[in-house]
Image 1 (cartoon, rainbow, N blue to C red):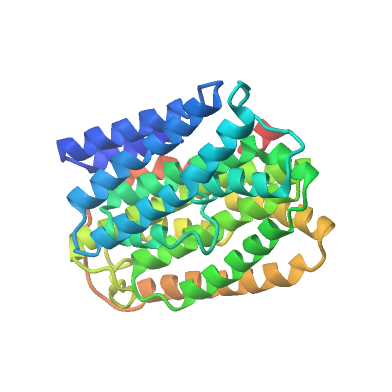
Image 2: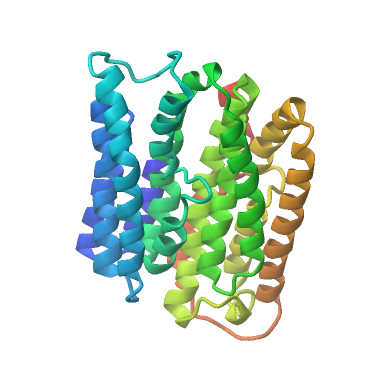
Length: 357
């Protein structure tokens, strides 16, 4: 996934510093999975914030980028120090990367809270829509495709501790995040903000899958994490291409997509339909596994999923109908957009499921 996202960034950007910062971020994200020591994992986890902050502050287009950077730094500092306190208190002499210790509920909460910032859990997510909206398209693709996966991978490392404590808090937060974020999507007029909240809603399924702590849920969560990376990256890429060509991000003005070429129209439709889990996309396969696991564990989740799919279908179809309606032509750089086609084929490759079975 890192190579594909970096490839799209390299083909899209011509600014040398943006390319350099993107490459640094990809290298840091890869190194996050290499160490066998907790403090090194924590170091790379925190180091990944630096390139994104520089990209947002240096290349953001509006003054609100300062506000989004404040949110990002505040949330990072708020949850970093409790994590370090628990680490030096209990794990300083232990060189492990996966935790399955019988800890108190408070310590498990503090350990998981650090990774929940980049998951991100609803109520700790306020930095993400602001960062997405104010950041350039390159930063949005890297945020959705790579940076959020560090929080998911970090939470997987401490998932064993949840076997010894009650995980009802994370289940409630996952359900609330799915419903509230999907409602936020229904009232967004900015296409990039809609893509940001849709990304938040999509990854809530990963949290819901993981906290049930059953093997099928973990499998569905990992596949959904991959699907989210591909889908969200392409969503921000296409919205960014429209903004750079037309100078507008409002959903109301996205009525010239389908009048600008069949390739662009089909790519736009495929990506946003994949966002609501149209078969045979990776999103459909992963959500099917996650839904089966959640219904087996908790019957109440049916109503949460019903509300989510209804609202997700509404805002995705609304965006597609806005794109179909109206006449006009936008001179898209079809050469650049064409490089997104390999990502679509991967996203729709049903044989990905064979990797996990």
